[in-house]
Length: 125
Image (cartoon, rainbow, N blue to C red; front, side, top):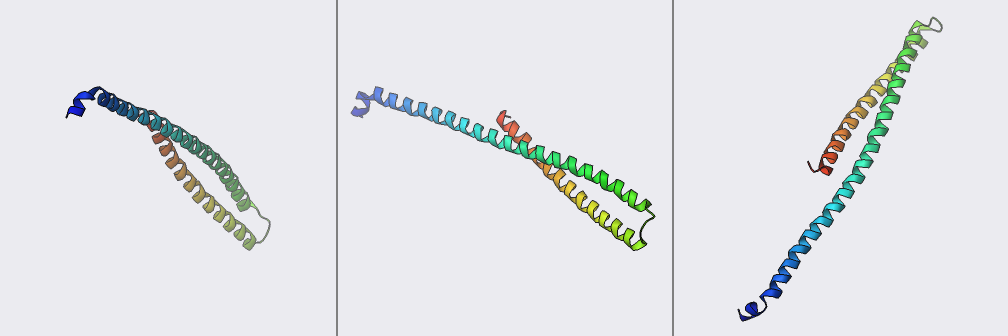
């Protein structure tokens, strides 16, 4: 007890330094976390933009295939079997592209939600 009475000022200073260092540590970690989230946000933005471009490309191909299918249906050249095979191939291509578009749209929506959450975290919401 005598030791505490003699050195109370030093003990108080040590405690204040410890509390101050805690505040410093919390502040430094917050900055690091924000930097990591910003990097992740930029990466996810890039993925969203790339997938949006892919969706646009698939939409263009979709339109081209629809026009091509209409052209093949109107053709009077070739046997019935050839035309049936061509139309079947085009239907398969359209189905595949529809599935890809659906998958990319779902992934794009998921990434947009995740991007919004990261933006909200960065803004402190």
